[in-house]
Image (cartoon, rainbow, N blue to C red; front, side, top):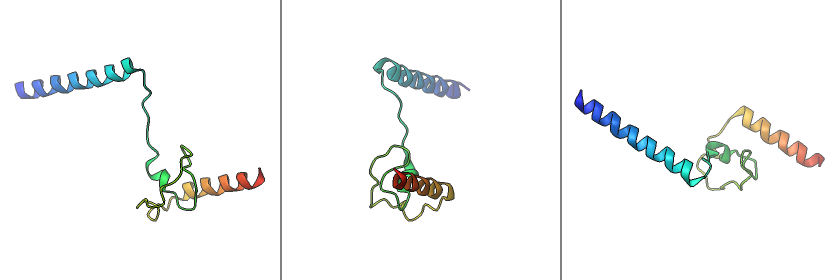
Length: 81
């Protein structure tokens, strides 16, 4: 029981330290676009608008119907503008 309590307190201190570091540094926590960056057929990421890495191993594996619909909608909007 004492090992569990010691491990819990240690993790609590580490978590508190990291959260205070984020708060005091004033930086926003950023996520990543991850697999969305690998949508095939798009020039830019749907989420962050950064250029897509052409060598990404995820490009061929992503077969998301919703993602394809988003890309197609963006292409139609770009053609209309």
